[in-house]
Amino acid sequence: MSETPQKNSFTRREFLGLAWLGALGLGALKLLEVLGKTTLPRRPKGAFGGEFEVGTLAELPKAGDPPLAFPAGRFWLVHSETGLLALHRACTHLDCLVSWDDGSQKFVCPCHGSEFGPQGDCLQGPATRSLDRFPLRVVTPEGQVAAQSDASGAPLPVEALVNGEQAEVAPESLVMVDTAQKIPGASVG
Ligand code: FES
Image 1: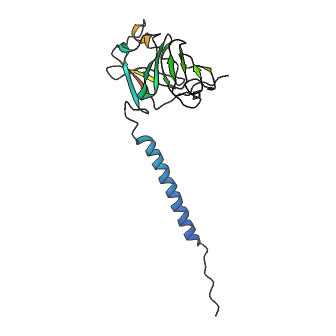
Image 2: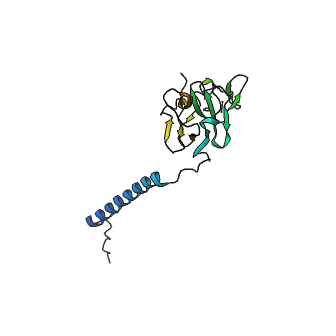
Image 3: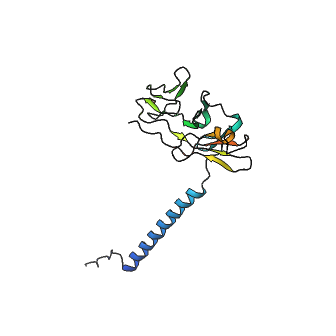
């Protein structure tokens, strides 16, 4: 006795139903992605990936003083004549932690010998990029942002904030470093 062949193709209604479910699923995923970006908590203050208080304007090292290490934040705080910088401690070759050598006035990588100038400029390879930077901002006791790094991470001229002729910012204003936003160092050549 011959059997009736089974019909295994989708009906138009089934196909439309599946397509609708698929579109709904994609929409839900997109919504989750947006919510995740806007509502996920940032890393806490004082942990790498979060924001660090490095002290008040009055407490900063003087321009030209040796860089100050912040091991928990994985950065060096550098106060040069042109302003304040937060340099990522990770070498741009293979991420070893660079040290400051006061004698040669350079950051030196213990792994393969890359060298970087006081502002993180790549002086010697195998690294091919300057040290990455983290943005800084100065927040007054009233909670106003008095100054902040630009997108290039150029040194923040904090000296002028307190001693400049025009701008007067309270010396008690806090200096913050945001380790969530790495600004890539410039490539050599
Ligand atoms: S990791 Fe720094 S030179 Fe290789």
